[in-house]
Image (cartoon, rainbow, N blue to C red; front, side, top):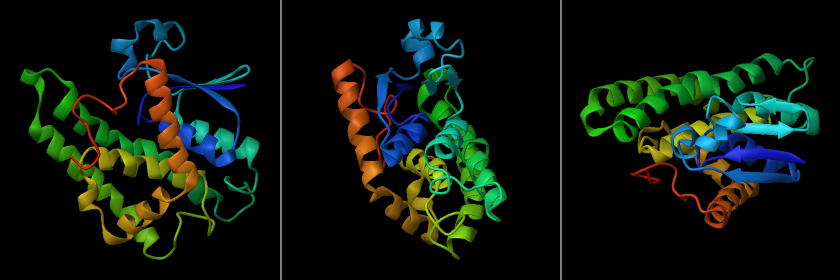
Length: 224
């Protein structure tokens, strides 16, 4: 049985969404955010104190994009992954890794210096600078989506899940109103997917059942 350790709307939402796309059975273990502060016992499972922690038998993964690649390759070859002999394979890998290293990273600094630091360490200037960085990097997504409905291979893949999470985080941080038109329409399409909606519902109900906050982080709400 697959086990996913998850915080509401954290990067671990990527594998949660993909698990729902794949229809695989899994156990969801909810943690308060950030777990390294509010769930110290979790350090015994993952010394980094971060989510996701994905366990599949002897396999233990902690990088959200890597988990997406693993799940797609292992459980939906030729469907949600892109085979190595497909001309789109390089673009697929690039989007998977760009989703976190280029798109999510600057947003974590917006989150940190807007909401997570003590009051005397909050920095609106840092938050503004990294919000601009994220929006500038989003131009690559926009350029692709002006030409096609999905990021690569002419179909929905795990790369769309990975990049879609960056758009979800932007929604929580109040950056979605600055999306280019093509990205806005793409994000709207992704949100209509049944698996995306199931993942949202699943994390909410699991958080309630396991007694952890049902919001992404202190003072973070969609659209604010």
